[in-house]
Image (cartoon, rainbow, N blue to C red):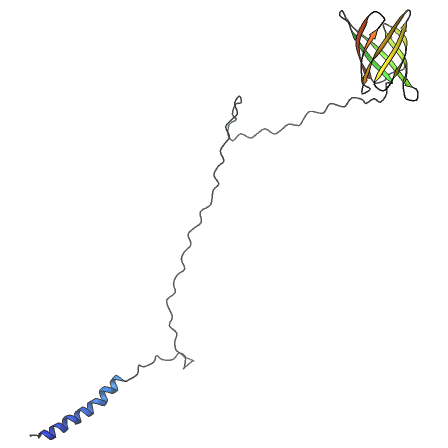
Length: 205
């Protein structure tokens, strides 16, 4: 069957009109949304990203203090072996007891008199009296004799007089802390140095 040009054109136009709605419809179809979560028809499922593991911390090494250098031993001493314990300090020796304290010349004094040939020992027994203790009386015990003694004392300096028959002795000098005497003995011709130490009184002469 033959168609005329006008009729063929009409058929082509009709075919284009039929094809155009279907092609355009295929291009404008919106994408299908994902199905809603159960129990909440309007909520859209959230996109969950994969969890990233936290970085692992490096282990902390213990800090060790550097050993202090050992001092070199001093000259003249033998070095002690390392690691040997130091000896514990020993207790100090008992203190020497204090000597008896004296406040007067009263009592017994041990007298020592030195000469070139010999050392002589004797004793004095002294007694202070008077308002200021300036008057001294007593005995000088020497060579089995008890010779009377008188004198004066001003708190440091003293002067004693002893008579032995026709001989008169003079003892003079100073007293240190009522415990020691340093002086000279004269008999008018000779002069001899002496010292005396205060002793505890044991008996009365």
